[in-house]
Length: 119
Image 1 (cartoon, rainbow, N blue to C red):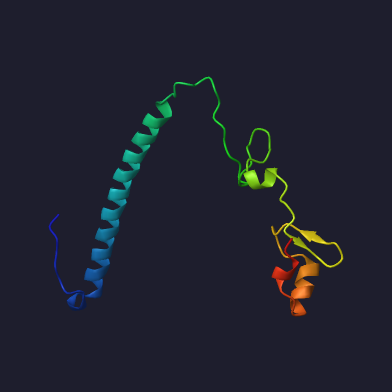
Image 2 (tube, one colour):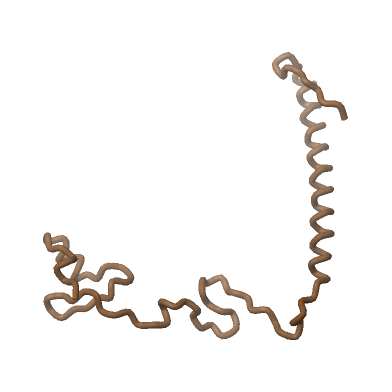
């Protein structure tokens, strides 16, 4: 198909509609060809059997870091307890993980610095 180089301002409405229809047909045909190529590649991949076909593949669930088989957490930070990093005036403790506890947020609004409660 030869390429047309025309000024679009000089074309009439019917010419532009016809051109748009032609472009849409060309796009649809190219999409169909691409789809066939992708389907062919997918069928090749489906036919592939890994060497360890006897072992099922683990899938990670939608929740991040959780194995779909046993539901146990796979994140390293969650598995261990964090050491205490801050201690409040009444013995309150915070590891520094998660959101700021109320006692520390209240002290900070009163003008105290977080550094003063480091352990």
